[in-house]
Length: 319
Image (cartoon, rainbow, N blue to C red; front, side, top):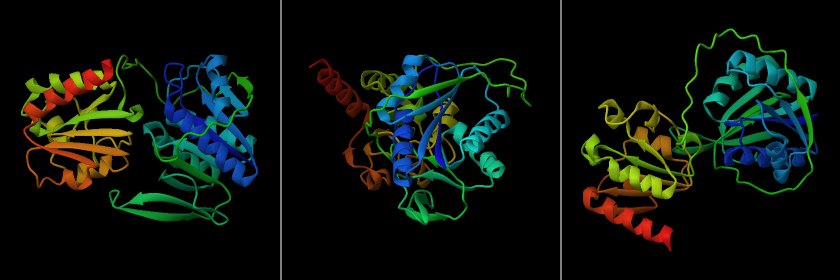
């Protein structure tokens, strides 16, 4: 038996979330006294693959083809390797890709499925995992009784642990490239920090007062190396693109640091940011719900507070 972890390279590189998944897989495999297999789909340099060994990857399978994403095709590839390696625990990221694949994968493997898992299992016999429920308001424990388990791991919940190893890399040219979907063209966002990979997110709400006032927020994000985001009313008004919308009906994020600027803190928004390690809120209303979730809060006019914050961070970065 073994543990199989599927990680997603981006433009041939691995992000911090990939290392967290490998670390998670190594610790689960160690607890179960099983082998760990890492599956990577896409062309990745051997040096980049070797970097996974720093976090405990001993066996790496690289399907070294740039296959256009199709959930049916990727599900087939992952399930084939899961069966081949006799994996009884399969771990994916709780990303758009992971959420698309995991249910299909569970059906193919006859597996129990738990999504958005928080951290390591609470117990291995029986196999019990922790996850959030009721829009992140509570933590529940879910027991998976099937022989094979499929998990999606929430970002920034398991941590990264170094466990140096010299990985054995198996490069495979897959013949599973027939797709039910014809890819006509692809558009890749470059030069920006993506929300699902961001360690820091700077997010704005209606307190920004209009799209013309967004430049200071973007400047702060640039100084911090952060991704930009917004609340739903902002994207609905067309002030910002919909792919920046964070919340229960948008993107659920889990950065190390989340700035909520001019965001009142509706329950749907709070559900989307509840896994953030630290939340900093700025709002002129001292009764705004966002302050109940924030670790640090500033009550004041955003138009005067934001420039001062930006200048303070600029000086800090320059020092």
